[in-house]
Length: 300
Length: 282
Image (cartoon, rainbow over all chains, first blue to last red; front, side, top):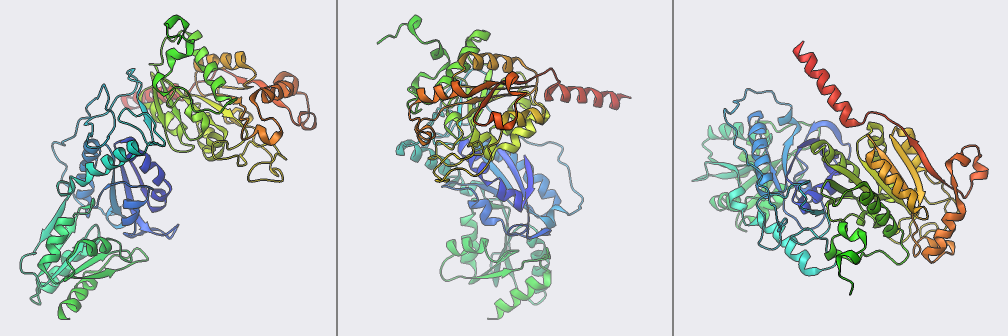
């Protein structure tokens, strides 16, 4: 596991690609801060949504989890380790400066469930097509394992120009995540039945959304709220469900519109997607900013 | 077809048969370096490479172990072989960890890691094939390209001074540093044996010919002419140490730059652990 914020995350993107290609389990914590570049150091933001998805080059999938409390920093870190072992790939904890500087009471679990790494002692060592090895070959046991970031076959032998080997490898690496999209979706969905308006949030922003929902409830407005813990792979089914339940969905995020692009992609055309954005200074949304966006959009 | 085992070249015991022949250009120094390394392995008494892990980055010489060596080999991003070697050595201290890389990889993009590893006296052996150019990518100027040499990015000649990697690694604190050329096959082999046995960081720089990309620009299109050039211009460090820069211009200083006994990183960590345990118990 390693932890960093935006600039460090940018700097090391090449090696996230290496971890994907070599099927190396690891956990990377990205505490999002204002960017691009040095931006505003130590000030919170949620601008690395797309960097987490596409920061490293080439076709790939990624797992990214967004905690909104200290308790979830713990729970999702445990989950990230387990997922990284199960899928043999990097898992990103997409936190933000606001969540990461919180001090809250937490419950420590009495028992932590961990995924034990299985040893594979003969090929296939690496994914190829539908074959996705469950376990890892150990070093220093005389297996002569070839690990490379270049395209390779199931044994690990480099193949820098064979189109078929590359296709099978990269399709395999992406499909091992794509086929489990629903299983990987971790979320909280409330009030979707009979709502007047929908809202999608994640990370620190969701904490303002909870309060905003109570504020507008006093005016008799019901809000359907989808709070995403899994950002990637994008929980398409759950977003579609919310978007089909209402004619308008707000997407609140501390950037100029990143997750909203994905929401627009999966929502039916009849549902209007409204961006609610805030950037700069590390100032999180106030409940009133979110509630007034809700009121404004319900009225129209 | 000579397939009987007693007729096999000794090195084939240590090579992945299925990946041969190698992709190196005719006259390349990488084959010589691989041969010298494996000879040292054989003479030291290793019948296979099961105790070794090889790490390499990007460039022709990074392909020496990966995929050719029948061992655990890890081929990573450009310049990052040493951090990976550090991780492996700390996780599996019982294994011999060896890094192969070129000058672009180890003293270009990865230079910081080389200095830090030498400073820590990390218990790994780094073998650098220095061809004085970015060969794989078409002959761009490297940090090691001599002043005045024409490259694809300096068509009228380099206007920069080259880096002396071995002297830098000595200054950074390594236990063992030697530089030879691919003309000095016995010396390379001995340096590898010495380096592998050494506690702490060992660095072996091998000036290696790249005839099609570098030699061609110097009017030496075949490997043999480059080897002659190495022979004619190499100067042992014992003679070079009393000569000034002017007299050393155009010379390749070879030999052992440092060979000393000094605790390596692993021993220092162990000592610190003992100290911490003592402090805790007190």
